[in-house]
Length: 168
Image (cartoon, rainbow, N blue to C red; front, top):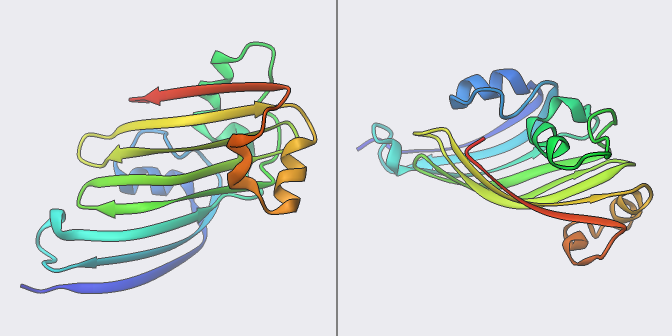
């Protein structure tokens, strides 16, 4: 058996190309990202032996390039999620075979923030995300500046909505 361990850094990667590489149809959106990926396998010939971690930074992207926000925007009438810059955007998780555990999702702008976690199946293109959306200006900036963005789920805000999005 031939195994491997590698670490990859991506700067200014294309979200559209990432979508295609993972076999999804318009999940990641458009725009650019930076990422760190660590992959390893005890047997390079078998997908189920592939393991790894990933962390992606979407800071500076336009919110209208993120399909999850497009889905949320349909469910929250009167709240505009799609015409703002993402000040802080991070997604991290683990890969085990064709299963992805998304451990942390954080997208923040002057108008909203989204925190969450979930899972994906690369074999079937199935997504299951649990997301918390907070709307209203100011709070997202304070959370990002104070470095407590992942504690945001505990904050009661002006408008707080919990969503589960499955099979986007």
